[in-house]
Amino acid sequence: MNSFLTKSVAIAMLLSAVVVLFSSSWLATQEKKDSFPKQIYKSVVSLERNVETVDEADDFLPVECHEKRVREFPTLTSLLEKGKDSSMGNEGGEWSACTHISIYGMNFAAFFARHLAYGLKPKSVLEFGCGLGTTSDFLARFVPGGSKVVCVEPEPMLGEVFGGEGTSRSFPSRPLQLSMLSFAPDAKDCSDALFHEDMGFELVLSLEVAEHVPPEFTDELIQRLARATTKYLVFAAARPGQGGTGHIDESMHTRDWWIEKFTSVDRGNGRGKLHLLPQLSRGIRMMTGFTDRAYDFGTNLIAFGAEGVDDILEVPQIAHDCFFNPWPVGKEVYGDKEDRKYATEHDLPEFLENKRPCPAWNKEGVDADSYRMKRSLWVEGQAQALWPELDLLIRRVKSGELKCEVERTTSNESN
Image 1 (cartoon, rainbow, N blue to C red):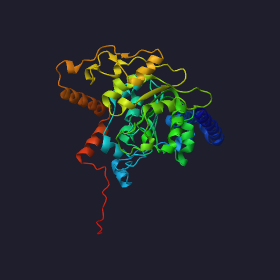
Image 2: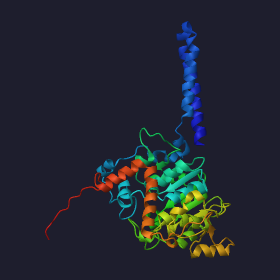
Image 3: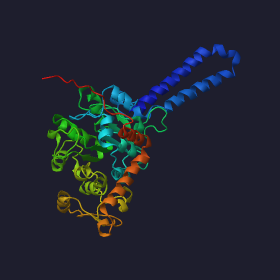
């Protein structure tokens, strides 16, 4: 609808311009009749080019979200000038880029992103709470056939991922960021349009974000994510007792609690409810999340499907490398107790099977510590190669060359 309206307006402008040019230039060009057709031709070509170069990002987004789209990305210096340093979000709520970098660094789950890109192949993605944006950027770059990716994060993130002036990649080869607190009154119109079933995204992501959202918005968050999903919803949230920065105790629930909520929520317009995809959940956790993010993804990840979407039994080989798998799993990959229970009740295979067995390092005389270190450096190297500018920024922060903390003075008052 946005594309149709935009091009209709442009065509109307084209016709109007031709009429104006014709009427105003006719007398002046009678003595130079050969130049008049050229003027018309040049004007037509110029306006046609304007029609074809409509901003594809704004064209894709709901009109209500245009003002929330981040078009200029901050530097670390500008963040500090605004007081948005690494302490932001410590009590819950939104973080700044400084918070991400100072506490977690890159924190990119390489095999998880591969599984999403090459296993699910989503043509459109909505990520609620995208942090530095590395997962969103990976999907925009590597989903076979391309993907239009939108990520929602309250604070504008860094141009080292999203691109700034002079970047060679633009949407859809880069993700879009919408900067808004989704449940704030000034974001209501955009949120309603973005998470509406008429918009719809083949993949909706929310990864370790819900525990930062005040509990009075939890039900609304669940409904929004479910409503926006046309194929897959991949979700993870901190479980009770899981440590972390800015977690709100009342917003932390077990995986079973989230499953019950997501599979019972009304998605609107009689579209049917989401259903658990136990095999996809198991594959993502055990073969991708567990390797890179065992403390959270390895336990918390859940995959849901919209009505008519089948579970996925196969783990794409591109999503993992057996040589670097940290567990001696062989060819059979089992989920946890709840996964196996669900599989039994629904006559599904009890385990997933890799196409080739992974080596069991603890049975081949390989030192476990050196093996894990080797693998950790290899995984970290992937992220460094994908985002060299962000990697340099992080290293400069960690070395102390760049600061992510605002200097605060304290008063020593006598009692």
